[in-house]
Length: 401
Figure 1 (cartoon, helix red, strand yellow):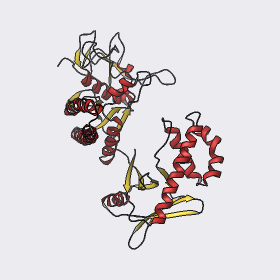
Figure 2 (figure 1 turned 90 degrees about the vertical axis):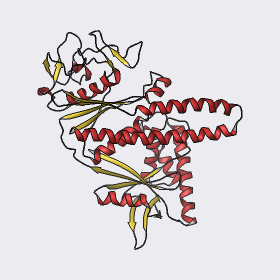
Figure 3 (figure 1 turned 45 degrees about the vertical axis):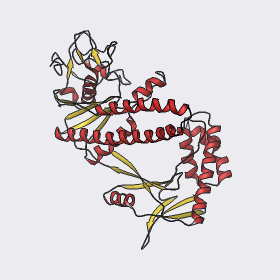
Figure 4 (figure 1 turned 90 degrees about the horizontal axis):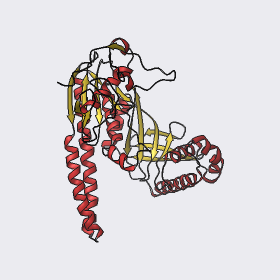
């Protein structure tokens, strides 16, 4: 299990000459990235590297590692132009951190024969950075941001503790549904977190609509209010996500369980409106925050393929159409089951985690039904087989209780 963190370190009163060198470097890096983006024909890194590396080396005289990092950034970009760019430097070849008697410095190799050492302000961020290094974290990469700050990218390896129980989490636009499942398939607890996020954001959306109508009529006050409202909403969502993550981790500690979530991704075929609804909550921010908390508490985080989690029935094991057409919040099946779709999805995530775990063959039960089996939650492997499970005529839970 590997965790990664990034800490922004503030440059402490650099000289004008050093600031000028960093600004010129940033301008050249952005210009190079923009030119590479125009030459990019596909999102294949080696294809871009082979076609542009020699020209980039001659025109900029950057270190090879810097050029390769810019190429990796260009491959990931979806837009048509680049205005800001954080350039990374690897330790020890092109970057190093050292300390004198009174100050700390980070030295960057901008060009083969040009190295610049910038002083680092020893504020709370630097204290946190030093504490992480002292606790076993390593920093092999530093970056220069568009605002001429230094970013330290830290990483650490850890072995999570083995736990039989699992906390399945279903993330949607309105709440976080949680199901605690034991190693033998018994549901221990089901909870909902973050219900107030949707209510608060709905009020913000209504207020934003009113302000936009006033801004379209030329109200400068409404434009300023829109900017403040956007920042207020972002801060609220970020804080509540942190609180929800703490609640989920505390549940995992209480029941001695690992945590499982879906690895959601954008769906190009579904359209922009569908993706906006699915990703109304910043799932990436939630996943990264949860991964950091799990690492600190030595809890295993299992990121699963979201295959059939919303269509699988927890009563008969069938894979049907999913949500009810009349009410999206309900899941209805031909066997008579009618249950909250989020609650059922979190159960499916927990069961899928148990199915994929090593040794699940002898511990987990399969639904005995003429319809689709529970192992339909898993995709077929290269041989065309599912992960093995034991057949039984006993359901994992009583969905009608």
